[in-house]
Length: 122
Image 1 (cartoon, one colour):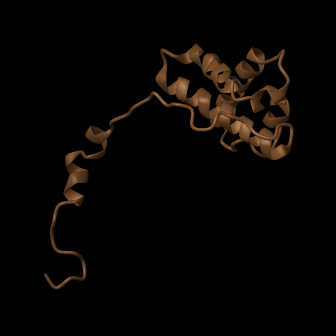
Image 2 (image 1 turned 120 degrees about the vertical axis):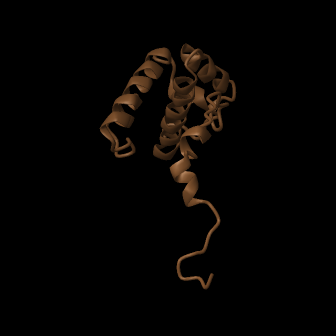
């Protein structure tokens, strides 16, 4: 089933993203190789997917990305018909980012200082 997704038009077009999806989905396929797709229709499969993605528990971005890829794959499986539903929507995210120090550097902050607007009278 993973091979069908990897060959489908649902794969992201960017080459790097394709490689990332392939990496996670091949790992996913290996973890669930003895199971039929219908296991993902069972609510307990959510815990199985969380256990699978714990392979990246010390790498928060990869942990979250694994969940995203698994969910995208399962959404595709629902759309294509092999399964009727799945229970991996909105898996908990752990990666937190604060880029305020990057985004609001002084040159950018100057753009946001109050002043007359172009075309205004004052």
